[in-house]
Length: 233
Image 1 (cartoon, helix red, strand yellow):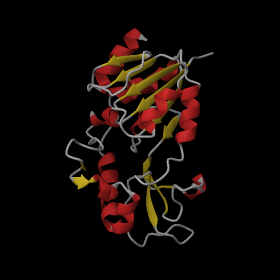
Image 2 (tube, rainbow, N blue to C red):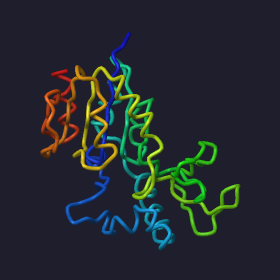
Image 3 (cartoon, helix red, strand yellow):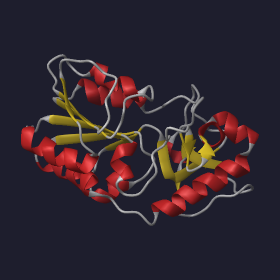
Image 4 (cartoon, rainbow, N blue to C red):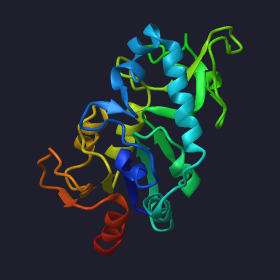
């Protein structure tokens, strides 16, 4: 029986494919204020701006490819029972070949009705539609008559997939964290659910604000860090 390996990934994995990290040191994302394009308040305030922003991100995604880190993570399935938990909204893990992926913050290539939000009732997968690289506009409606919105978990909304992610980490024999500085919650707290005897590897070129005796920090970018991980695991 294969050991269970859980991989938690963040923006640093996709950065080497040319996708901008979610939040730069100046608090902007692609020159937009994060609160304007990544919060439920921003959607209520200016849905046209938000749709334009994600239409551009979707178009950009069609032009980028998985990098060696994505492919290295996918290749781990040859030896382990792998679950990828990603904070990224791109589909590069899928395109690299990973088969079990939990998208904590939604998926860029999908949309859903705006009246099916991340509240206590959540939303059913039947209300989520894959549109690939297509654009959505004001007036584009779901079958229930509601305006379509990006299938993204914004600030101010609950994270429906956090419980499946916790379950996966609790069962992990090995936890690998790649390309995230562990500062965005609730994802940043997932490592705490790992068993006391579960080794934790963090691949990130920056210092991480975590002190835990189980952690081995590989201070590299994702592609080089994955090469190192494969030699020491």
